[in-house]
Amino acid sequence: QVQLVESGGGSVQAGGSLRLSCAASGLTFRNMGWFRQAPGKEREGVASIDTYHSLLYYADSAKGRFTISQDNAKNTLYLQMNSLKPEDSAMYYCAASRVWNYHDRLLKPSTYTTWGRGTQVTVSS
Image (tube, rainbow, N blue to C red):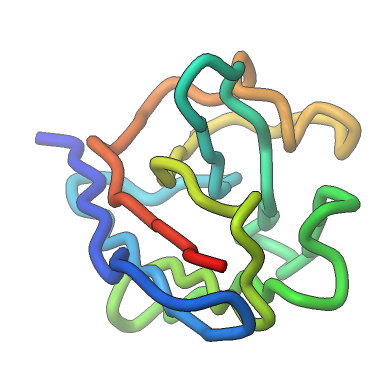
């Protein structure tokens, strides 16, 4: 059974850090990504990775603050988030796709077919 399980969310003050984890089971994936959705807003891509070539892609809002990485041995995806801001508060989701996609699609939710249930991140000012 294909499954993605996120963990690591929590409440932090602005300027703090969190590391999210996504444990994948059942299959190997070509592309994986982190997305977030705040109340009343659309789901948006934060960071993604081409797992075959370790190519990384970031939304402008994440560049310089967030780092996506993978541990192939553990089949786990990570998102290190530093210098967190209140506007980073959202439910964060891990997503995966088994097929290759053009890089300009890797931060679009519609690219991904497998999703986790999310982990909440709350950043207070």
